[in-house]
Image (tube, rainbow, N blue to C red; front, side, top):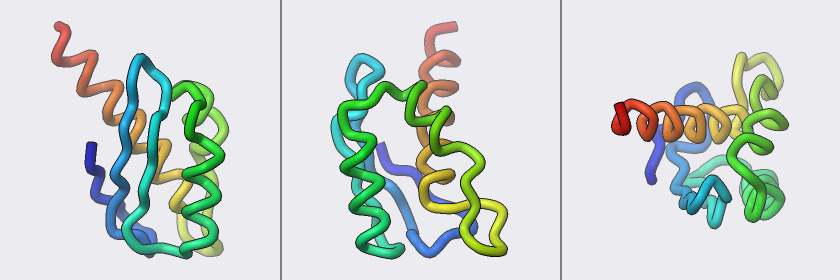
Length: 86
């Protein structure tokens, strides 16, 4: 799934989830070392765990961050999946 970020240096996040487990994450843009680190840390983690750890993290004066945007992307994916099952 591709998520267009808002309010951060990274332009988008590509991620793959299977059975609520994060399989891969790739940020387009952003601080390379930080985004690679976040990606590697969340791979293998459940969506719920990643969201609980990453949501609300801020980057300097910004109200969001690349980790927070990943949490938002994962939440959006879950909400879309729930809506599709209604």
